Image (tube, rainbow, N blue to C red; front, side):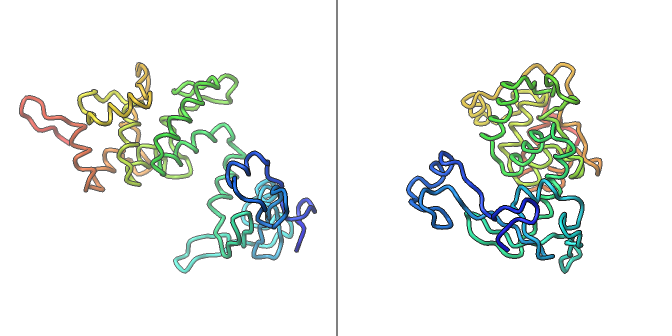
Length: 266
């Protein structure tokens, strides 16, 4: 199949020359060997045999059937986990048997709630441990008239980027996710920006790094302390850290400094 079943156009896509130059400055030819470097493969082959451009599939995908032939494209792993397998061909090459169900679910959710796109990007950055990306996103929110406690001009409803809880992922906050994925620096950053934890509880190197990066706590009056937010299992991020143990034991202990020689109750 050489054409998309949705739009009827060839299974290629034009790449902005400036973007391509940033990604591969030294390449004379693109992935399909066309001089000039702006046309690359863009093909998603579903198990039913239908082909789509990636964006065409995202635009037309609904539930668990092919948007063109309506055949069931859902399958299951040996452990019973749902998956949608495809053969994906793009500028990076060909990937066979790729499970795209998580991406399709995420994109379907964002179609319904587009105002949450930045919040969900925030959770992704927390999972990756990308402090720089988190700060860039928060700074972008401020530039676009988003405040850190989520009031955006013209927004459908208030969105709190820092305290957002994933409705599709056990109501986890970014702090839950950072702890679950082992990113201590992100956990400290979120406590700095979205809690009332005393400055003396933070490691000196964390405060110094935050100052260097321009990360400062705003007035927390009237805002929920991220430490009290619970996931669907009624666990705060601190509960989760205590459960995981290991390096998180010392992290938890810093949240409850010893006062007057008395150990805190946890």
